[in-house]
Image 1 (cartoon, rainbow, N blue to C red):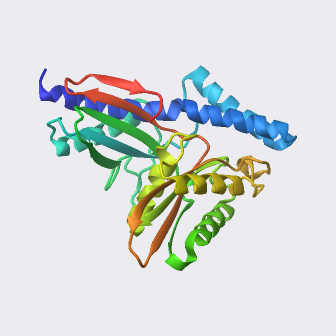
Image 2: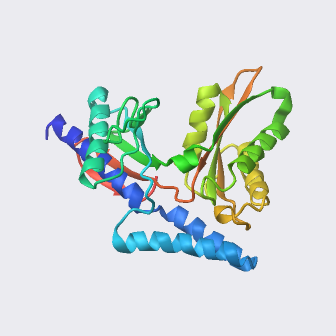
Image 3: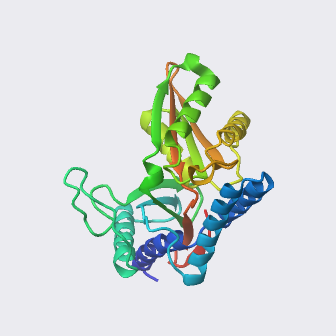
Length: 300
C-alpha cells in the first residue's frame, strides 16, 4: 500500500458521506421523532400529531426510494479527527475532502448552494472560497482518521445568534437569551429543532461550540459537566412549554434536544451563542485506517 491510497480513500469517503447524510437520518434522530409523535398523540393535539406522522413518513419514503430527505442539500461541514500516529500531508487531506464534496455534487447530482456573498453567483460545485467547511482536530495515540460530515441547510442556519452577556447576568441571563432566540426563530427552522448552545471562550469560539452542539452531538446525550447537563434539561423543558410545536403549528414538541458545549472564558465576559438545526439532524461518519480502508457509520 502507498500513502496515495489513503488520500484516494479520503476523497471517496468525503463524497459518500455527503450522500449518506442527506439520505439516511441517524437512528437517534429517528428515535427522537418517534417519541415526539407519541407525545403529541398522548397530549391529544391532532395537528401536531399529523405533522409528526408526516415527518416520519417523509423519512420512510426517502428510505424506500433511496433519495434525499429534503431538497436543501446545505453547505458541507466536515469534521476530521486525525490520529497522532498517522503521517499525513494535511494540505492534501483538505484538498481531497474538497474534491470529494465536488464529486458528490456532480455525480449524484446535488443542488449546489455555494454563492458569492455579494454577486450571488453560484459556483455550481458546493465548494468555493472557504467551502466546504473543514474542521480539524487531533487525537493522541490514535492511528485512524475519523471523518464526520453534516450538511447545514440555510433554513436552520439562518437562526443563529450571539450575545456577549455581562457576567453579572448569570444563569438567568443565559436562559433568557436562549428562550428569546427560540421565540424569534418561531417556525422558520422547521421545528421540532435541535438547539445547540455555546457558552464561553471568545465570540467566535462560542459560535463554533454552538454549531458543534447542534450538529454533531447524539440526541439523548448529556453534557459531562453536571451544571451544563442540568441547564440542558431545564432549557429543553422550557422550550417545549412555548407551544410553538412541530412546524410552528402548536404542540408539545418544539425541540427534540438542547445540547450545550462550553469553554472557559475571560473574567469580564460571558459569550453565549445559539445555533439551531432542523428536525432532520443529518450527519454521517466514517473511520479510515492507515492502510486506506474505510468503515462507514450511521451516525457520529
